[in-house]
Length: 183
Length: 180
Ligand code: SF4
Image 1 (cartoon, chains in turn brown, purple):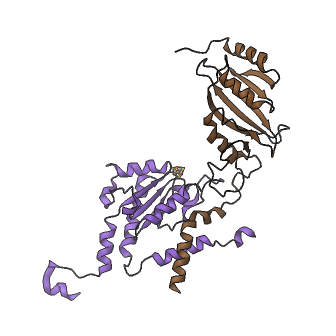
Image 2: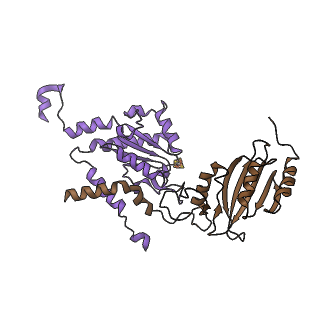
Image 3: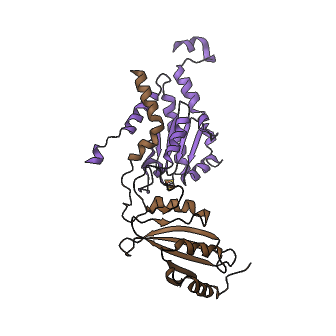
């Protein structure tokens, strides 16, 4: 099996600097992985060429997640994309800062696998993705109030007893029918 | 009764409820509703080391329709609760519930935004087994205690009416405590 060549990250950074110097804010190498802080303008073009163009060929979206930096950074959220290239075996991490109430661009047309991770980020962090076909909750039940991985969400929840009604909903009508019948 | 005295040991007089209760208590078919680590404990209850077959409950019924006894083993999240509720509804009467582990009884250590704080908010429970996880002996103990309870139940007094009331209470919770 081929491994990662030691100079590969340096080459990658060189190539990215040559091609996308206008689209990125900051680039560094962190724990053996190239980390890019991307600009929101042209973000989709950057992603598209990272996937399709030589010498990058990042054909796999390994993970898509988000961090809430409230009280730490000026811009509250960061959406994080982890890419892997099965051609060159290199990996890269992209960060995109998203302010509160701002929408992120969906990369679903570039990597189909972004569908559920983006829904998960919406569910738990409350970041909406423009261009996603179904921006609904994935993990928490429908009807849940709030986005539980936000730093300002109380750790014990808001008191989720309101959900019990929807749990029992399918039989509520049945019970009412029974009651009417017994009258 | 005097009748046995006259006719010898060839038969015994009893009430129909006692016979039915006796038959029911030795033929429980458990539905293991296993969602987390407590279910590992139930697996060892099933093995010959602890041997739930001694109490007539060796046949785990993975379809709720054929089950009499629901064993809720593990953490129930709000997302899972409708599934548990549906499984419970699907079981035919008479039915009983044993709630195994701190998680199922009270939410346990998961006092969080996602975990149902005790399954008795949704379905009626007959036996609670504390512990994290409980020892297999404790699950067997709960089963034996439940058998005692079953044998005392009257067939003229189905619990169904109670269940409708229980449901009403769950659907219209007393919110005064939360609001004050
Ligand atoms: S009570 Fe303990 S062992 Fe049982 S499901 Fe909860 S965490 Fe797991």
